[in-house]
Length: 121
Image (cartoon, rainbow, N blue to C red):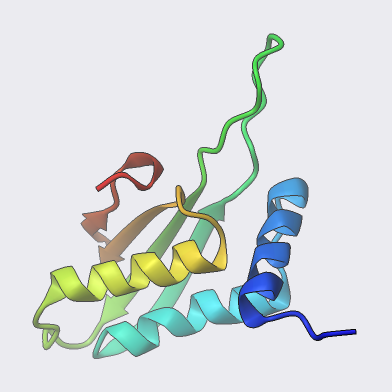
């Protein structure tokens, strides 16, 4: 029996998240670590998310309105190349979950980035 690859494990965790609307301890740790990798001067990180599928009132299929929001308290503005940093964070979050997760990033309570809807650039 072969061991599953990292990508297969991530895909399985994402499927479980989509079904349950809950995230695992590993996913939480990754969400908390990602900003520390991509941004400088982080004093505090708060994360808000909604990954549960939206159910409709009629017989229409459920749809994803998934969102991960980061509220970062920064001690410095030494974060050149923000476009690349936001892109890297967005790709990491989407790899952890699925490609149509909307990402929002706030610096000191001011919105600095919101990804395009449904993973479209």
